[in-house]
Image 1 (cartoon, rainbow, N blue to C red):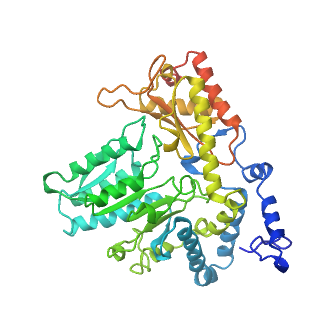
Image 2: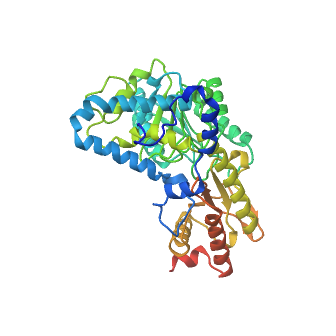
Image 3: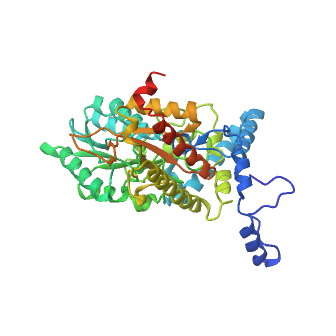
Length: 456
């Protein structure tokens, strides 16, 4: 979009070759703390919003840009459809291609979310089983902490067509990538048992609950060594939270939401499909008149709907470039700050982080004091609701199921089975995490347990 009248376009070339003038202006033009507060002033006041990982956050300037696109469609939808929509979606795809280091824009499709992308990939695999190209009983390997929607997509498309599923259970708390790699190798071995083949491996780049950065590139390389047919990296949390280079990672399919850590309005994601002989057989599950024109074109029109979240990607990139270091600078500062906040909370509660700092993205898992008695998923949900309703803190709680009688992390009073997952985004302040720290401390001082919270 062009800047409004009277506002200097930062993309304009220097006047009379005065590059020093432009350089000095850019150094002085980074977004200020006050401007950040204004961008997120629509957030509900009084809430410590430390759960960016679930739904993301959209700045006011991007919401305004989205409204402009919505009105352009509503004013003259025919002109918008025939003359503007596809061109602008192609522009957004081109930006994504450069961000993720894809070879060609045709490898990038824009879809609603990671759930839609999983349906596209698993529909393709399900057809291969149903049509006899894959043998009944051949396997799909996945991590136990995969998103529930991915598990249901496997059920809907793969198992009903005759595929088997191998679930790799990862340790948590986790201390190193080597622990994850060892368990993954065991899963691949189970998938190849009795002469069967592993047709697809689904690898999270960042697991959600519990949250851990997975060594995706290393696992993809292992899949290649072991003859796995195709690899799908589900990176719902990745773009804006970890560095993403799809060629370096090497997967066949890679998806990341753009509304979680890239500031887009919900919902929008990209699906990267490396060019290969199977590319023409990938189709959007919502069939329109574009069927057969390639996944990227099919995805760009699935009927009349609001496409504005896909169209503001250029404006979002401009927003991130208002910060020192752009998107990478934001990512690095969020990581450093969330680790600092996590360590502060762990020290206050006498617990530990769920993984080393280098295995944390812009989110961190911190053990809750065992005296709170988080003993099941319902306890975790009740504690989360209590923190929201009584303390104004929005944070997810994870119950870690003890596996095979193993004793997990311990504090001074027993086994730690509850964890909070904190996020850090540009709008967060120290006060948000102090509020969480003090809320848990108050519950402990009151002698409260999750069982007591259920009776309120």
